[in-house]
Length: 165
Image (tube, rainbow, N blue to C red):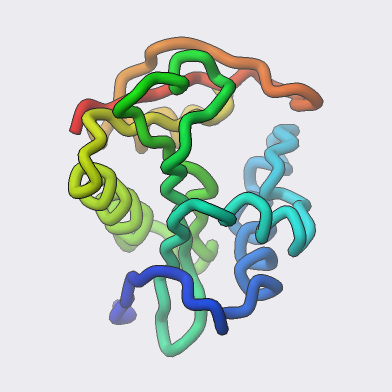
């Protein structure tokens, strides 16, 4: 098993490499008919999404093989997440050949620990209600479904999931 190192994205890390990783990691969801932003976002959208947030990357042999985003500002939507003390998780992605090695769980643990360290009492996130394997992943980590949201332009309704830290 590779030795994964998880750290904050550095300014000299390639956003092109990160964006391509997101495309590959979200391809399975695209194949299921879900048009997640990460399936085809541009490098500029990647930059915008990480701006003002904490983007973590997992490295193996110097290559980015995983990522998770800790969104620290309050979101306007979904309404459930627009509360003081709620951090949001986004853009969790793992290179297809690095799946089932616990890397997604390690990335989530990293951002959960960081949110707790910053004083957040809850972390929330969302995924398509039809992405059963992701719902199982999150509920297996202690998340509970707290609502639904339909993001504009998406082909699916999202399940909003939250975990008390």
